[in-house]
Image 1 (tube, protein in one colour):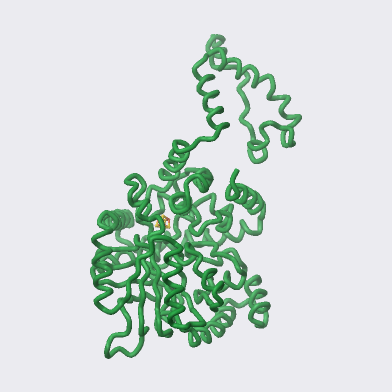
Image 2: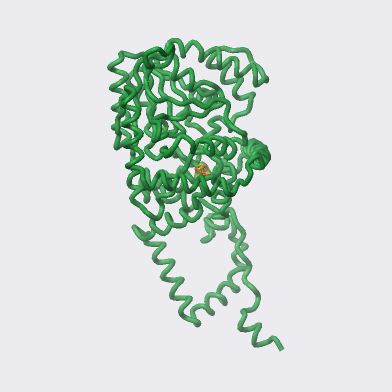
Length: 464
Ligand code: SF4
């Protein structure tokens, strides 16, 4: 068992027994579902909207090369420096080089999962730069030295009291139970950082090929300040973020807000297409866009699972996933958690090391049903399982399936198993739950099905 698997099992076992944590998450996500369903009804036809969104993303990804060329050409025409990063290391190096060349000291960031993916904060902090997350949830988890808990709600696992204690300890503020006051404490701390920052780093929600602009959608206005105040702006985005046309946003912006947070639309929707142009009063003097591959083209080459690149990172599949709701976001040990994380992480970080995430699923299909761009998530989890076995199956697994096949092919062995099972099942009660129970991995969390007192053949023989 590799380290990732044992860490996942240990953490999942611990967190599912934490009733306080489960109550917190279930309450938050229960409220989300009510809000999302209410907002969905504002669409004339939610299912048609999903279909159009899926087809638009399909078009975008099928012609990704063409769209990326168009996107970068338009950005460069406005004076933006576009960088291509094949790996996470390259992306970090590009960004660090820009920071060094500007002799920066303080960097302000708005939420970007791609930055988490390449461990950008660690790299910058190791070089001695001060890095401050400006999204409230990200700011909170940064103070706790934790990764985000959720793609959209990074600090959803914390109560107001815990946040108040954290601010008291880290920022020296007075204790409070008021969300408004907590927000103001963070705001006062962050405003100073915006002024001091030399560089602003953002992610992107969409990259519009037609206009050569990135679109950022947010609720706090922190990304706008991150982009507007520092002299240099860097946007780091995965190559799959492309949408062909500006008009596509008329669907994608409300859809992302509805599916992700149960909102009609997010409060702030901004476009960035280049540094400050002559005659403009604000905006960065220098603008860099870093396009991150990091094994996305390998996923693109996989015709069967390519549609995982359609993901718009709304987080809806996490919100409805019974596994996520019980084990929580940190247990996955990955940047992208929940069903979409379980689908793409094996592609981004290696199938054999991360196949366990595809096994940790009930395959109920709730994720597929809710995904606004209709990614067949639970089917992809099954495909990951199949691919993992085809690539490399374990000795015990092979042995178990050979034994199973042999018993199914031999009526005599099949009958023997039934007879022995009926014989030993009462005795099993004596060891059940203990370490000497040979079925311990199964029975520690589940009941063994009871073997019927008579076989179907016996029933058939005796039926009259
Ligand atoms: S897979 Fe679908 S539901 Fe999950 S985050 Fe991506 S777009 Fe949203």
